[in-house]
Length: 375
Image (cartoon, rainbow, N blue to C red; front, top):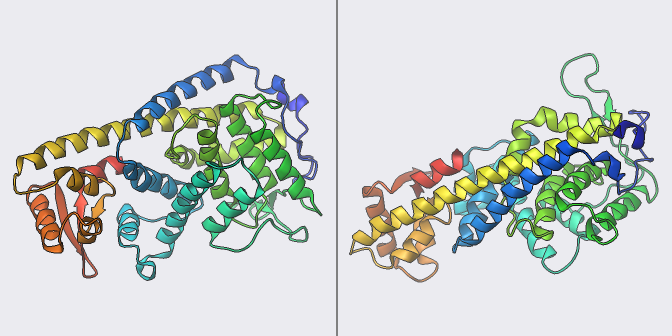
């Protein structure tokens, strides 16, 4: 039915300058199946919201959960790094020793939290998108100029490989106009009173269809997803593993995007995105629960060791990120360097941490936290 309501892209080799403005017609998503999926996704998100609020150490969420989201989203763009490389890079913070994929993942995480802070003070605007794009791409560029020919090409090795699969809008002021319409739809909940989860799914398609930048549109759009959920009050922090599901279902993700532009198949796309929210909110909820239970269990063990002073500060540090080094315990002034080293070595003896040496640097890996995050 939506095929007859939504004006599709007639020629995949030409810029889609007639990309329909938002909102889409309500008839497109007024289906029992979509509303059932919407209900399940909101229920799963609601459980996650309540659980994340209960964590006193938000650094745990910032430095672990969000890094996993950054890793998964980057993998969708074939940017791969191992958990070891990623967490060591974050722990050391020495840019000259970080490999290129890990750098890109860390930039994604930076954009995730920079945008979160930006939106605490104001609505979505074009500067928001540009700032996210610039961090992700490590660029000073902005919205692509009208003269730049941009094509989304078909992948693979078949006879159509390399041919245009989609050409986004192009022309003087066209991209900016389309982007402003998207921003109006996102920000104005009175005029565009669409459920925020549906608004997120619709807006993500629209952003990717506009394709406002030369590169990095996929990662910018997936960051936008999470920020929209936070801005609409469905998440308290940008910690949803949404890209994990998209990465695992990459073929259906791209099938959904092309299905809207080529056939007006909004139902497949909306059901896909709602399922992504439901599944990843469930996964994130259980990861946070497992981490909280593990933290309490290890704290109990540390408190038995009377020689280990300030156990609360110690446990907070080793749960802020999987890899801990001596400097992480000394930088807040709670421990001297010798005390910090002795304490970390003792935790290694207790099998709570595992001591590793990489390129002359000593790291202490929180084994169980690492296992939970990898799962």
